[in-house]
Image (cartoon, one colour):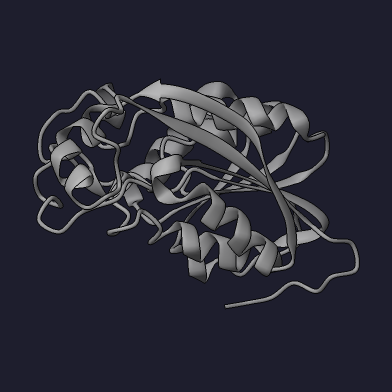
Length: 234
């Protein structure tokens, strides 16, 4: 997701889209994972679309894409980007839980996933809601894992990117508990960005970070409906 800025920040897109979170390595890793899915003629839902980079990548590969974000700045930015790149993307301003379309061949999501220790919410310059995700980093991830089964077609696939700081095993277990096959299919070790670095002491204090670490692993989890299983709803 992307939210308004209080002042400029390196993690925010420049120019007319300065109020939208800039695509970074997690976005790149999620786009790379799209190569594992045949998108020609597929229907795709991109949740927490932000800049729209993943949605547009899917459209360029032949998918009929719907992009969703709860921030109007992200919705506007995605529409502009789709026009600029010459693709059709249906963009919705909506909360995740309000999405009522179902039967998607592919669902993608790059949600907020940075753990947010108490007292740090207002300490970060930039669109903090693009990364703030509660004390364990799972405020949005848990919602996504719960609603995926009802969004996917019978043979549908979901691709979710997140940091190890938000509990990869927890996501895999939640997806399996929801009736999906799930496993990590992409992984990349990256240096801490400015947000995690600014919270290092608090994250170490709360046991969320090893004091010797200066890198985090980001992963893409692939989840698939088990043929014949019924979707669940929240």
